[in-house]
Amino acid sequence: MTHETPTGSDLLATGHWPASDKAITLGLMVPISEKAAFGETPRFEDIVAIGLAAREAGFDALWFADHFAMGHGTEDDPFRGVWECWTLMAAVAARVPDLQIGSLVACTGYRNPGVIAKMTEMIDEISGGRFILGLGAGWHKPEYDQYGFPFDHRVSRFEDAIAIIHPLLRQGMANYQGEFFQANEALNVPRGPRPAGAPILVGSSGPRMLDLIARYADAWNNGWHSDTARTKEQLVALDAACEAAGRDPKTLVRTAGANLAREDYLGARPNPVPFDDAAQVALIHEFRDLGFAHFICGLDPATPESVAAFAPVIEQVHAG
Amino acid sequence: MADNGATATIADGRAWPASDKAVTFGLMMPLFEDPETRTAPSFEEMAALGLEARSSGFDALWIADHFVMGNGSEEQPFLGVWESFTLMAGLAARVPDLQIGSMVVCTGFRNPGVVAKMAEMIDEISGGRFILGLGAGWHKPEYDLFGLPFDHRYSRFEDAIRIIHPLLRTGKADYQGEFYQANDALNVPRGPRETGVPIIVGSNGERMLGLIAQHADAWNTAWHRDTSKVGPQLAALEAACAEVGRDPASVVKTGGLYFDDSFGSGPDDAANAARLIGEFRDLGFSHLILQSFPLTPVKLEAFAAAIEMVHAGDAG
Image (cartoon, rainbow over all chains, first blue to last red; front, top):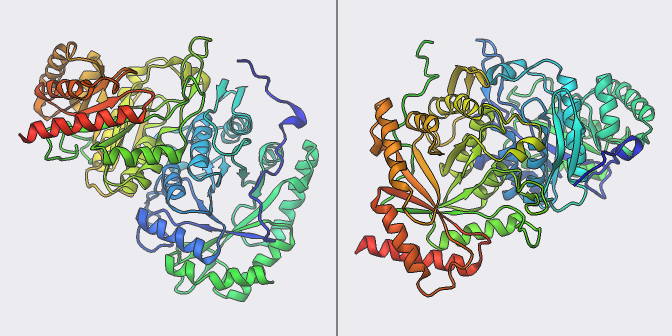
């Protein structure tokens, strides 16, 4: 079987994203590490309970970070282990109905891009078409060092990876010769429930990354902060990158995320929006009015109880 | 290197799941496209089959690790395969009681630290029911498709298992290999078992047997229709154990049995299968993995009947 790699505008992403009749949908950042916003280390059944509570409270998506260990292994900043992202997402997809399940974000330095595409397809199948593939180039050097991954050329490695993953998801095939990753008439079969595969989200604002986002990403994330002035500057650069690539900027789905302090804030999630329901609703509305379609909440604490207690905030977000 | 817990001592088979049965049974799961219909089972079909295997007397579900089968030629077209780790995680979340294992994960496809982290997560998801099967890989077309190196497969395997074994047993590894390294690497949080998941390796090569003797709780030999090849394989395994000072009785012996497409259609098929299983049991095998593709309801019924006969015979 031969396969011509599409070029030019054929290659551009189209903003493939779960449909919703809400002006802005809400995601929950799920705590999956030691000394997380859960308090103690969340066990798998705790994570399922948080997911089911999120569904009950009105969230639309669950998001999972991709790390091996946070921290630097020092006395002030000891390593905090993190549950493996992909197998966890697969199992949560099997246990929690209805909600989107996404990586925020999977690091392209830790796994071969073909393996990432295959895992994405399997989770999309397990979830019945509810998976969102968030991708990033990675940043936390201690994790690379522990497992012997190269930390150099991260953006070039990311470029090779997304150039392989994107066609594997959209067409089930890829053919690409990169310096760091290659695909040789590679196949991604069997396919999951969606003919064009899972959406791709990328969170970055570096100039090279913005160009790759414009070409390959359905959705963009502002990189985890609540600063709307900074966000407006990011949007100018994002729109410019889309126009330079020949893509209508409106086809790029905008997503944001930030830490939100809740009752009995643990301090596990830094620099939160203070615990004030009205202020948190107003912030989410500000992002909505800037054209954001999805807002990810880093609740601290993040327990089944604190997630349930967030339901009135969600109600106000949708009422306003 | 100082003994900081980042090296594992020689395996002793104790990580293998205990059972009061003389022999337990695993089912090789179908997870690839059928050559005739070119469709693969859906996740819900695989989960339903897992539940059916549970009620048919099986103790374990086994999952292969491939990207494609076949070589892309007209006679052997590529057949897609579902990704193994995410599938095992999904099955662990939906099928209770049974062991879930990889038969076998290829150490050429993923970094060993990632393999250990995924093994630990599935052990947590399953409440301590995961078995990590490891192999060096063999199917060159899949390496080629995704640009993975096919050279030095045994050396890569050696690096990988020397990292994975301590990461599972102690949660730490420190190892400088030519192909894979671990630098005071951690595997935390830990799953429900203090010393982690069992490791099974399937190979009869001399270098691989040496690594099995040091690192594997269990050994697999596959795929057999009779016991004719097994005697010399067991002798070689025992010799490899003697070489490293391990009691060969501490290696759990498992075998893969292959049944052809007509299996289940003859009146004596289940009884013949039970007799073959008995021969393996008498040679010291304690777990047998049954495979026949496509896996039809008739074959599954015959497997269930054979399993029942073996247990009834053991009880009598």
